[in-house]
Image (tube, rainbow, N blue to C red):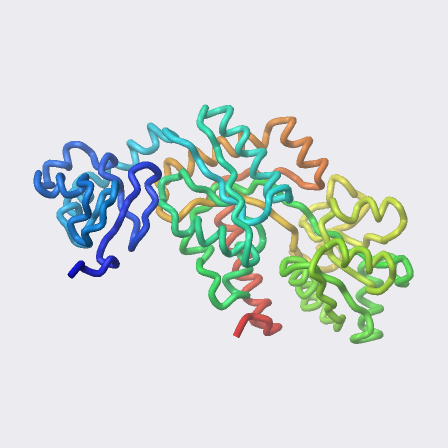
Length: 382
């Protein structure tokens, strides 16, 4: 009988992706001096065309849990990160976007990919893996090899979904290493012109006088939770009206069927300029370049309030620190380019930048903030 396949660790020598069990380093990643620890018989088995454990014909290397390679990895562990940093990248990179092509996340990923391709002369492939509120693509990267060749363009769902969904399939703090913030897009607290409030303070006062009478539209977990955060901070009661997309939600807001919504500045700015909607405040910590006349929610009496859309690059946990730093430097260089900054500003976004530690700290704060709110309002999956 063939042994259980779960006892094996299979490594594709072309892409380095693990298929069963924990991921392991490929044979050629083992420093040559360390290979003396591996018997000739074991070496032959590793590169054989037939799997010695399950009998399946494979052009793969097979590592059995607890085999002699453990000694080799221990002996050469110190040499692997240095070698990786010196030669990285030596093959194509992949940026996984957990949404369909053409959206904001996809566009920002392609901006970075173009710069990396031009700088490193290596192909950078955008892999759109949409589905399950971004969980499919995110889990894919969480389980990828920690070698710096598979990246994730993360967005707010990255820090929200593990608290919101019972089986998200990943932990944003344990399964990923932060690279850099790429862009931040503020949301705008927007109301229909018929709502008798010209400022956020007036809207809050109106909601307090009429608890449960005002309503707000949302078209996704991030905009929904942004409004819930404002409700919590201001201690007001307004009714949530969920929509399946931003377009119908905006149409109903313009038509007066709903009274309030928070959405990306890029989506609502034309309606603000045209007088069809009224903007009261932005949800970022600083005023938006595209609408500097709008105060922040923090300025309006709610210190530290932030619920902006953001986009940043991460890699699987365990990626060599030198590779993380190299990626961070190049991403920051990309964000300094005039063409990148101008294009981002045209989309209502501000370039991010910063160190891996800065982005890690942001991810920790966002994860804790949304987990606390989700638990408080009781909307997590049972």
